[in-house]
Length: 171
Image 1 (cartoon, one colour):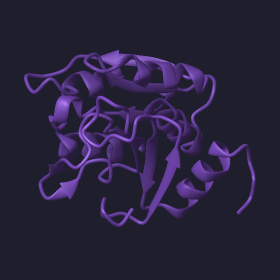
Image 2: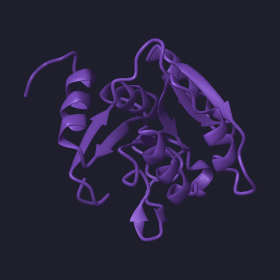
Image 3: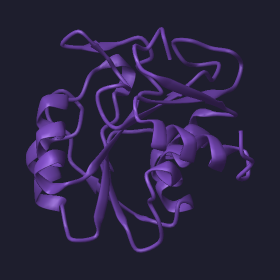
C-alpha cells in the first residue's frame, strides 16, 4: 500500500482473484452490468461473469485503452462499475473515465495487471479509481510466480475485500 501510495492492500492468490475480490467488494452482483474494454486479457471478463454480472465490452481508442465515447454510450441503469484496463503498460485516460463515472455515480475499478508501477499524471495506476487490481504472475512487471493484489484508499472497500477473499473471516 505504501509503495502504491494508497491506504490499503490485500494480497490474493492471482490477478484474476484480485479482479473478482474487487468486484465483490464493490457490491457487484447478478443483474448488474460492468463495462470494460475490448482489448484486455480474458480474466477481466471472467471475473465479471464469476461475480454474476454481465460484461459490457466497449471499443478502445487510438491508445488501445477504453474509449470514453464508447464507454459513455454503453452506460445503462444496470451499470454498476467501469473497468479500464491499463494494457501492456499503456494508461487509460483516467481523467475522462473518472469524470464519466462521477457524472453517472459509478465505481471505477482499475485493472492494472499489466501496468504495475506505472503512473498517470503523477499518480500510481491502480489508485486513481475506487479500487485497483494487480497481478504478480510470471509474465508481469513484478512477478512472484503467481499472486495478485487489491488496493484501495477506502477502508470499507478494503474490509469487504479482505472478508470476501478469506470466506468472511473477521480480523
